[in-house]
Length: 276
Image (cartoon, rainbow, N blue to C red):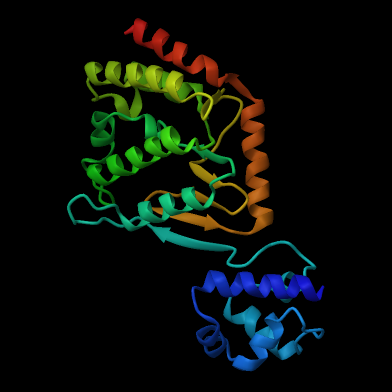
């Protein structure tokens, strides 16, 4: 229990972004006491008052600090979409998402897109989605998509994607939000999906489930570390290990229900293209 407390106290300090002196001052713990608690030679748990100060100040439970639960610190936060008006600059939320992709290196990143997977989108699709957006500029999303695509190509990232078969069919037919999107642009997008689905497999795997059988909100799961649910102009970010695990299990169910497997997505795109 002592070793677990020391490790988890270290996690809380690291996630706070503060050095030990500033963490101690912000938490109301004596600096020398904090150093002693972090020392491998320490053989005593802190007083309840000290654990309470850490727990209250940094959104964790005493049970978690002692290893009695596995929920994790900073269990949820809201992250609003913000527009950057600097040329060639990413929006702050996009910078954080890309940073989380980097932190998840070596783990599987799992993704349910709002429409089509970002890294497969053409510029015309991104502009259609965002030209009238109050939260994001198309250029920012293009840059984010380019970074994700480059990461797959150069770093060999492991990215799984799940969405409904009907969402891709509706895009190809120009239904719903795609009703005013020109057929020539839809053809270009289907060609790009076919080319990239072939090129990026197996690093990028896109599963299509039957939307009449299953439903999923837009979400990205960054390995075991965090999950970001897109709520529309904002993200709900979960870092509780239990929450991330539950959402990963939900993603597993989407994969089990897939009616189109990743190796077949490119041909599906070509078949939809031939129907236009």
